Length: 488
Image (cartoon, rainbow, N blue to C red; front, side, top):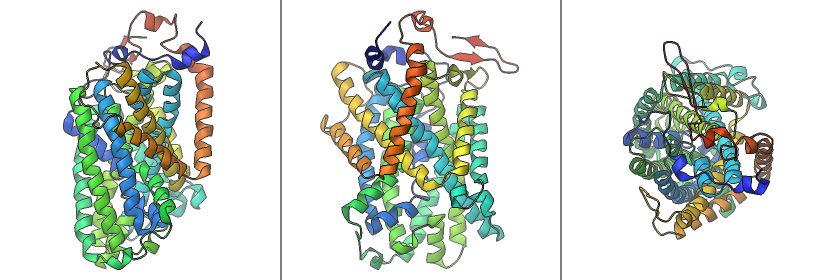
């Protein structure tokens, strides 16, 4: 029997990570890029301003720049690893191939925060915009009891729960249908943000920037920590590694293209938002961007247009984050780190149906009862920890596998991954102590699960029949009218 140290340090061979998958390769370059843009834009810009501006003041612009630079450095590392290890699982799979099983499980805990909690946070933001839209169109608002978490005076955030259910239905139907729907929504989303910039700039007031950094560098860094959760979409592209066409080329390219578009739009919208509205009005403001337009124009119609766009496009953010979470759990279940139900794939839709239903149910509960500010911070620290591991993993993989085929190589190596590591560590230290404490407790609980369940069931444990027989670790389940096959 292997020792605990050997179990924690054992690495999954890259050739085994890239083995044949039961998932279908149906996602092209444009759809991959749309996954990155969709998951990122909307998560932050549409509602995070009300959280970040009170922390940083007008200097929130620099908070976006800092978060964007750190995310950009890490995105370069993701681009190289995605091309070198084109599989589902994102950071979890990269960590398993470079740093070992123990680190991969820590990353798995981070990714549950990054994706599941993010999906819940975005669903709560969608609920706010839906309420704004109903008010503008019909002059009614949802009862507080059905539109807010208990901590905010409600019983359950029902619209957020309904959104999760709709996304789950679409994901269960099939990956191709989901990515086509997402691509359409991305085009709507970009159009809406360009509309906001065009209208919002007419209300520009340079006086709003007079007291530029009222809370100093600490406020800017705190704002960057909260904003950072809006950059999770860049790594969502890498969760599609086993469903992407020509992954060694398209995965890195999609990440880089999404990065450029996202950062440009984020900074432009943030500049216009602060220029159009005094800083004091951002705190606690629901559906912030539409409220800004309503004040600039003096009429509700621009706000209504933006609210419609936000309701449609934020749907796509939830869709993609749920998709990413299910594929990460799929990879972990295939490695036997978590129960095999998460690796069962429908023979009709070629999607992990049971996985999707379970994840959606959990996320719906989070979205229904937890307020958005806590969800956003927990997503930030999970994202930062995962990003940090990617940068470390890149350095290790360069040393261990210098001849590995790569679709993209990070420029200015090793400076780029080192700066990414330092940037992630710095932003983590700026988060609230309670956020860091909850994160540490969560990782400890997840590792306790690994020691109790995963380490002896691991596909890399000597004597486990599935790996020794070199057969797929995924079960294809029978659907009505379909055929079944089993690969253990």
